[in-house]
Amino acid sequence: MIDKLPVWLEIHLRSVNRQNMHHALLITGRKGVGKKELTKYLSTLFLCHENKQRPCGECYSCKISELSNHPDFHELVVLEDKKLIGISQIHELRNKLYESSFLGKNKVAVIPNLEKISIDGLNAILKILEEPPANTFFFLTTDFLNQIPLTIRSRSFGMKVSTPSIDDTVNWLSDYPRDDSLRAIQLTNNLPFAAKEFLDNDLLKTRKEFVKDISGIIKEGKDITIISEKWIEETTSLNLKIEWMSQILSDSVKFNADQSIENLNEDTDKISKYLSSNANIHKIHKLISKTNSLWNLFSRETNLRKDYQLNALFIDWEKYLGISKKFQ
Image 1 (cartoon, rainbow, N blue to C red):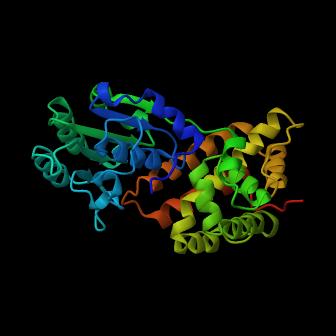
Image 2 (spheres, rainbow, N blue to C red):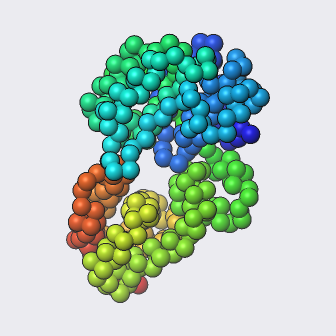
C-alpha cells in the first residue's frame, strides 16, 4: 500500500509533470519537514509503469513492498564506518545508471544530504547531471541549500518544502494526545516528522531531564563538566539538547524585545526571562551564534571531539551569561 502524503507535501505534486519533468529535482527544507517522505513518494511515482500523476498501486513496480528491493531504484547512503558519501560510491552509482533499466521503464537515483558529500563527490555528481542517462530521474535533498555549489543548483529544478501550519501538523498527529502533540510541535519548531519522532521516542522525558540539568547549573551552580560528560554519553539526544539551549537564548531575546510576549517555551520561560534581565543582549546574540554553529558541526557528523566542543560551549555560556550565579 502506498502511503498518502500529508497535506503540506501533497501540494508539491502540482508542480510535478511526468511528461515534461526536469531530470534532476533538488528538494530543500529543514530536517524533519518531510523531504525524505516526499522523495520516497516521488520515487514510487516515477517508477510506476502507468503514466499518471499518481502511483497506480497496481503495477509490478508499485507492488514491490520496499523501494530498496526495486531493481531500478538506487540510493546513496553514508556507509557505517564513514562520515561522508564516498566518491567510489558515486562512481558505482554512475555505472549502474548507464546500464539499461531492469524493468524497461524509468530509473531513479536518490542522493540525500548533499551537504555530506565531499567537493570531489559533488563534482562527480555534476558530471552525471550534465550528461544524464536516458530515462533516469535524480532526487537530491539537502538541509543546507547555501552549502550546495551553484553548479549543482543550476542543473536541478528546485523544490522548497516549507514548514506547515500548526493546525496541519496537529491534524496529522491526531493519533497522539493533543496536549502532547502541541508540546512536541513547540519543542521541534513545528517540524512535523521531528515532532512525530519526539512523541514516538518519549523525548518529553528527555526534555524534562534537560530542563533539570540546565536549571541545576543556574540554580545550584552544578559543575558544567559533570553535565557535559552526562550529555556526551547520551549521544542520540545531544543535538536536540544543543538546539534547546539555542531556543532558551532566542526566547530571552524575544522577551527582551517584548515583555508581553506569551509564546515562550513554558518549561524554560523563567530561565529565558532571567537571562533577558541579567545578561548583555549583545552577548546573548553572540552566544546564539556559537550555539547554532556547534549544532551545525554536530549535524554534519564531523570528526571533531564532541566532548571538547561541548565543554567549550558550556564555558562560553558561563563566561557570557554568568549562569553559575544563583537564579531566583
